[in-house]
Length: 78
Image (cartoon, rainbow, N blue to C red; front, side, top):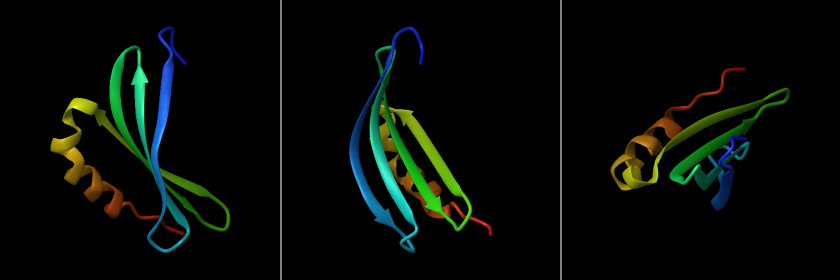
């Protein structure tokens, strides 16, 4: 945590892909700057893997496609 504080607002959480993954979307404020944040969590027998992508909220509409592509491209190797 920094001196200006951090605020999280969960926008969405849903199962993703093969059933071992969840996609969570947040709005996040850090020292007054608003960010849009996606986190893909994948669970295997032994580990959790995280794919975390964020951008300034003002670019969210422009970058949504690229962010979705990064989430879809994330692979977990066993």
